[in-house]
Length: 248
Ligand code: NAP
Image (cartoon, rainbow, N blue to C red; front, side, top):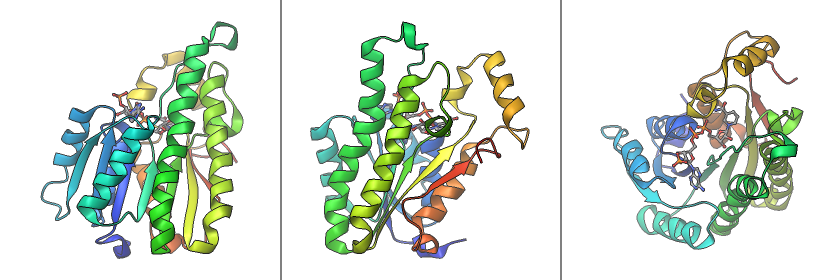
């Protein structure tokens, strides 16, 4: 248990379900107050309710990470409610898979907008107050696909590779202000996002995973908790793979 997260304030985007939902409960169980943001407001409220009895405050906010006014409103609500932001987890992400030849321009634009511009908007807003308080942790949820590529996911892989470049650049800009910016690159994690894949695709993945098993959201949460805690204060600009050895 890393007790130093007690009383800290975290924002998790895309917290209604999947990995984001698990991140919210994991941070809350470490004693963090959490703002749960999601485009699905009702889902965000459901997640927030799950932390009842953990002795922390949670706030659900509906909003689209790729929409600047929504992001501004979310950050304002966080500051109003909790007074500060110690941790930002850019988790909201989508897929619109297709082979390049069939990929629609709209599907390219939307994936880049949510996965990459979304992280830019949230980080920009949050860094302002982290600079003032001279401390902060930003964790971007990338993907192994951003490192190794994946047929049928050119838009998604480009967005996640972009997110890794973004992570390293911002890490360099804010390191002297005691703000650490890192990425977690999950491999195949069992969520609604991967549930949609065909059994053929799942089998191909499994054959390439040295650990011979898929991960679960708790595996990702353990890495995020580490990167959000003071145990990782001298680590910045890194990509931590949580993938059973898929990429090494
Ligand atoms: P998920 O189950 O689809 O959950 C994503 C959440 O983000 C959903 O609640 C979704 O709401 C929300 N969201 C979508 N667009 C949004 C927007 N514009 N603004 C705010 N929220 C938005 O996905 P997941 O599997 O938990 O993935 C979470 C993150 O991990 C993503 O960044 C993903 O790329 C990454 N990742 C996942 C895996 C995996 O194996 N699952 C592997 C590598 C990386 P709606 O449901 O209403 O769309």
